[in-house]
Image (cartoon, rainbow, N blue to C red; front, side, top):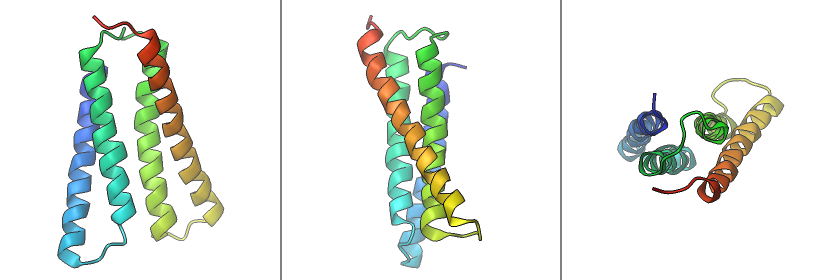
Length: 128
């Protein structure tokens, strides 16, 4: 599967989740999910969509190790960050706080690595 298609599909799932959470918050008047909602839309929907456009616009070799690392750290990091934020802020399950904190930090760090790889790629991948 092309990187642009994969990232677009994952971003569409984030858009649905973000819209559902926003609708739920508006209907219920309960805004505990506001930071999670914002990160799902910004990190999940907008960022992954922007990465998808990048892969569609630029000729990035499908076998590029940098591209593979970027795509998967972006997807795994966005899931880890938003899920970790949800677990950390709402504590819906009786999980040890240390485990939740580590999950949250690892997700955010993985996403940060993705942004670093993306920045590097913008300098090493040639446009058409």
